[in-house]
Length: 156
Image 1 (cartoon, rainbow, N blue to C red):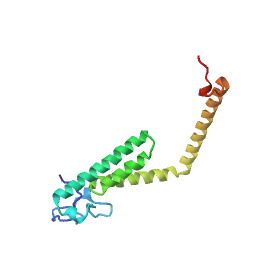
Image 2 (tube, rainbow, N blue to C red):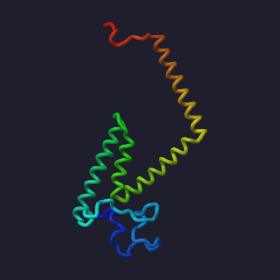
Image 3 (cartoon, rainbow, N blue to C red):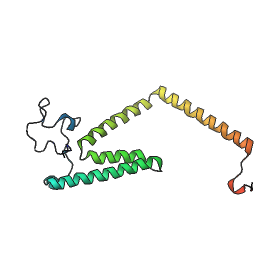
Image 4 (tube, one colour):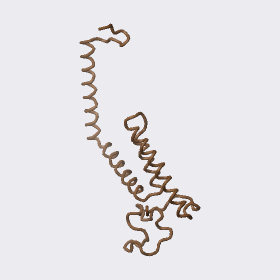
């Protein structure tokens, strides 16, 4: 199974001739250099040890991503954990590096869009409207039923 993480180390000239590199375009980073495994040299020296390293990196990254998905509904920094798991995968796998690069670009675009004055004004108006409506509903409930704490409830 070729994951693309060992590209650029010992390949022949059978790669991409248009760019003048030996790695295919899918395994290259934004700078045009091929994605190379971050494993130590003694691990890359043995094919079976390197495959074991990649399996370990995959399992650890998967565990972090699954924990992040769980934290989307449970308390905790879910998105941070998901991106951390993706970064763990990106140390070994070219496809994860490309996904992480795409994600960083989309997050940067969203941050720039959120800083747009029109979007900020709209968000401020929507938040204020929501708070006013919530306050009115709470006020109506308190006016109608009053504030009865749970330990002061009478048997019904």
